[in-house]
Length: 98
Image (cartoon, rainbow, N blue to C red; front, side):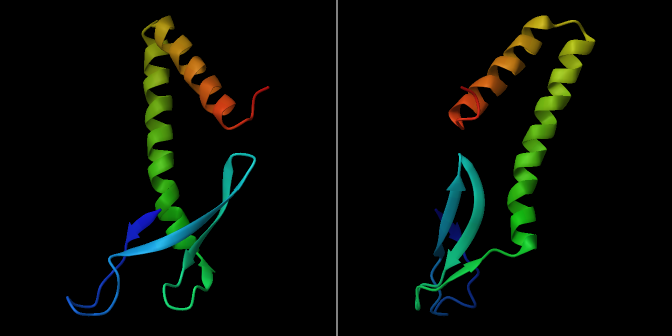
């Protein structure tokens, strides 16, 4: 995965991308490390960087729950069925369902 990296100036010597290494256990990302382009050394992301990444996930998760709750409130059973089917497919893709 490549992500934008800050640059000091146009000739600052820093790349516009950096390499990240993801450790995945049972389909779940358990660690993200940044690779130093010069030394090849890895350093784990900070708590703030993990929070920034998670914020996008949680915002999408919240919107799904909000839409599901609204569909149930107005009696739209099809939306409820679609929600459960989507979650089952998601967990199946992660290997969480047999």
